[in-house]
Image (cartoon, rainbow over the protein chains, first blue to last red):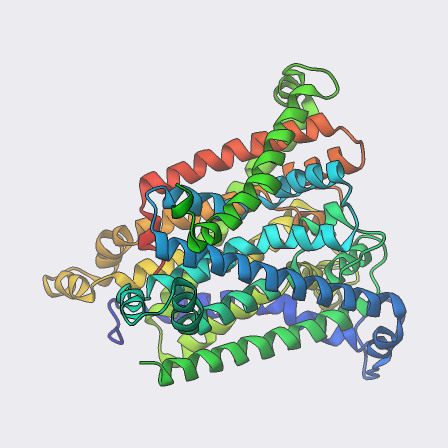
Length: 267
Length: 275
């Protein structure tokens, strides 16, 4: 598809597309200089760049506690989400029940429902069982919110598996357990990694539902940023944003490279 | 029957069983709230459809969501076109402009717009310094800033279905059109555009549904002044503790989204888009 299908590549359309691209990057770039301001309030540094807000971030106990809360919740929920999604996709692949479609629908439901409605649903549940503002409650919340995405990744992975893999393994005398863990799972390594990584990122960034179910004892990083944006906008938020943007960009590059290498070595 | 309950059946049921317990059952509970608090009956639903505040908010939500959807899909079409058919350098640029914002937290993206648009922000300072304006413009806490922030958030989501449909277009069809003497413009409007309609419809529905249930960007860029339905639900649950009314609003939003999802499945087969 290198051939241009239409002669619509006039300079005007090119310009419009490039401007749209610039529009997409603009707010991200705008945050960078603000994070280096020497002032206490949001402002652009005028020749006097300073790292004070980065320093403040690394010494402020509240921000550090939020980072560790976020890491804990994201690690726990991404591992649980990956295990649940893998068990679900594998079970479906082996059994292939007639009601499989309904099960998939149920497994993807929290992704299709608007986040604010999910928030009300989970708030209702956790208010009932007393999990509001606890680690367990927040991890459960994130598991509910990110597992559907992990399920999509795992279903895509299992759809590429050859069913004769199971037959071959069973014919050679492997038990059901051995087939599952020694034959089928190793073939899903990359899917498992992708599902875990996606869950990790989504949990790390989750804010819509988190707002409803936590906020005093457990404060994740996005929740603290939200509080800052709502109450008083401190340049420290710009510093956090820049660090997160750098991490995100590194993660995208790392994942792309990983996929690239997999694509080469595979098959 | 017990013999058939093997490890795979159990594995397959783990997640659905969990979601039945912690998602579907509480959803019914929320519905229960909507018809029982503060008093049993459909009072909350009547209020939703008659209360002036609620109606105003729904009207604003509809207006903002429609504007956001149209703008996002238009921009996404432009980006997708150049992402799919551009020169290698432009492809790479478009890909970066789509994926980098896509993966960055919605909070940071909204904050970026605050930095640009606020009264002492980058835009006002630059306009003041070149003398284009005498007084800073009020740009945040307006419907304009909310729409801008939401469009910025939603464009990548709108790009994916459109780009996926564009990739599947057989370029020979377009060459045939040109070969038979049609002008590039005629070919675009009468051949290319109609072929991308399924992608456009999928984008429209996805963006509209996202816009409807989304409240982080409107809350930050609207600063509590431009309240839409999702933030209104948040206020009902947390600030005024009108749990029944908040629940009824949630069920209302869910009904609209379910209708739109039904439309999506009817108009286009979504599995075609996951390529």
